[in-house]
Image (cartoon, rainbow, N blue to C red; front, side, top):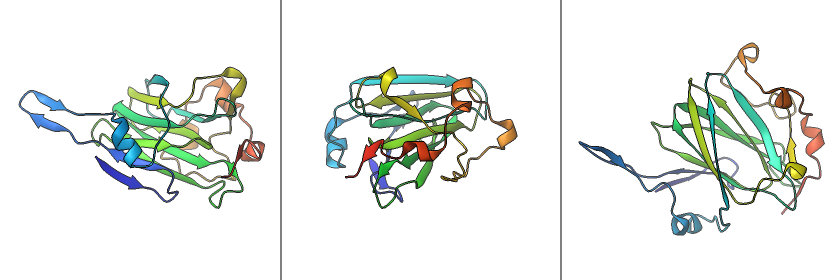
Length: 186
């Protein structure tokens, strides 16, 4: 498995190998021991999946606060997305900074988004299927969000703002200043 620490080193891009032959391919997409060797020691307790039917869908920027803080291991199994992680740990040297990576069925990469980070993605293709493992269960009472295009964060989204497709809920999210105090550092 290829392991790459991004500009915020806690955010890790994993690319499992695919073994191809005339039938197709085989890939071990999750291995707890390999993730532990890369520094991820949290158990996964929930799997989620989404389908976005058109290019330009933005989901996020989402997180959960204590006691249901989540880390996520995200992959795109159909189509392609631009996936982002934003450090929301108050006092962190990278607080408010973001990193992103393209995840696709072609590149087979997965992005580790640690607890204390906001998460969001933009679909680069129609019919983008996203699957992710979570380190804690979903709790409506603990869900929080920040607006996808917050100027204080300055994410370079690969879509024109006028073409973005948002849920009503995500269109109402507050700015990044609302995240202050959601997560301690370290």
